[in-house]
Image (cartoon, rainbow, N blue to C red; front, side, top):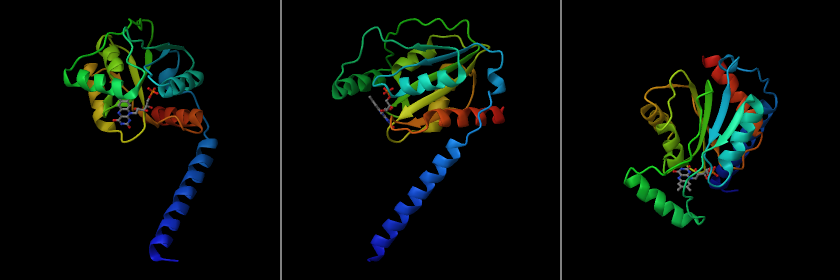
Length: 197
Ligand SMILES: Cc1cc2nc3c(=O)[nH]c(=O)nc-3n(C[C@H](O)[C@H](O)[C@H](O)COP(=O)(O)O)c2cc1C
């Protein structure tokens, strides 16, 4: 066996071991409803273009209860990724937010807000939603899905800027669609948020 092959084999084994440990840890998550959700009206709002964020949003709602609403565009993006990416790039360049259907969130105390990451930023429909709502006296709990590199700190800063420093808890980033034990990941994150309060 060459030295390079041994190193590759060792790295693969380490990765497998880490994955197994992660799965074991997640399987044993002991979820306790966080205090910040106690006696609160909860809403899960999300934008999803290809379904990943929708799936996570539905699972969050299954864990925390409350209502769920989808951010809908007035004019949908083209179905083909290349054409869509071109429009998104242009809109980002021009600082243009697409028109969205109005969502009434006035009744809720805690709002989970979900978005895919687009070009290292919040998706434009989610940005449009955040920009047009009043989050005074509400808690925002952001979550994102991504498929490559996510610039986590910058995205949370972006939300602070848009929502004018509304109270926001730590965001959770979910990798794409191929996520196993989604519900357990959500429960673990909520347990951590509860401990951070
Ligand atoms: C226009 C566009 C830009 C994207 N940019 C990024 C990116 O910068 N980083 C990343 O990790 N994923 C990026 N993605 C992938 C999406 O964030 C990822 O597939 C996400 O889970 C899609 O969520 P959805 O199915 O709810 O729309 C991009 C996708 C699109 C359509």
